[in-house]
Length: 112
Image (cartoon, helix red, strand yellow):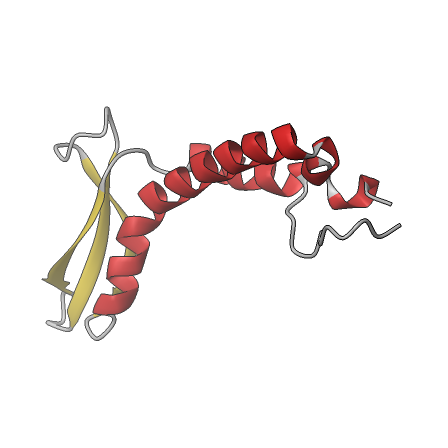
C-alpha cells in the first residue's frame, strides 16, 4: 500500500537500539587527539578518551593513527558526542512524526 509517505531509509527500531548500545558501550566523555611519536620516532596521532566521569584526567588510548590522518582524528574525536546528538534528534523527530501519522514511526518491516 502506498499512501504517499516514503519509508525508504527509515531505520528500524532494532538498528537504532544497536547504535544506542554501541554508543553506551564506548568510552564515555570527551575524546581528544594529540600528536605523538612511536618508539622509532615515527610521527603518530593518538586518540584519547576519558575513562571516568567524562573528565580529561584519566585518559586511555582509543586509537593510534598515522600522522597524516588529522581529518580522521577530528572525525573520530567528535563521533561520540555527534552520535549522542543524532540519537536525541532522531527521537525528537520521530516523536513529532508520531503526532502527525503513527504509521510513519513503525519499523519498515511492519509497514505495508
